[in-house]
Length: 163
Image (cartoon, rainbow, N blue to C red):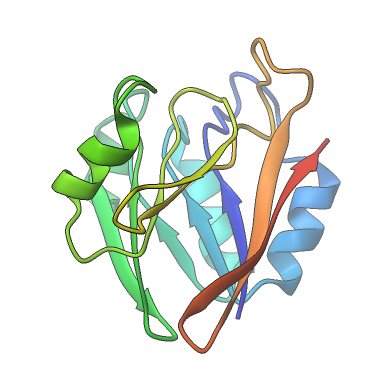
């Protein structure tokens, strides 16, 4: 199962559209995961129409229309892997322990908010992934997104892509 992970797209404030490589990845993915800060509901509509499956949550910059259609925390089981998606996890210090306590039984937590790519594993095995932002790099050297695969309940081939 092929995954695309994005967050903090901030459309149309930070960009008018997603970069072409992201759309190419969306078209070939089995599941697209968006960890909030869409900003405008138009991207949600387009991703729902173009993605084979979309899992997403709202972020702090998302208004009532997006919050009405998306959960604060999205959850899914993909090929036996328990996944949660949330926008904000708090400060980097202590993140792994804090998230393991907040999301028991979850194998992978996808989050956003900071625009800083993140890939760590907590002491109890929770994998934490932040794909950064494909449209607003802030203080990062590149705009980014992630891809990964799930095979027989295992997360594999996690890759950060610079744009």
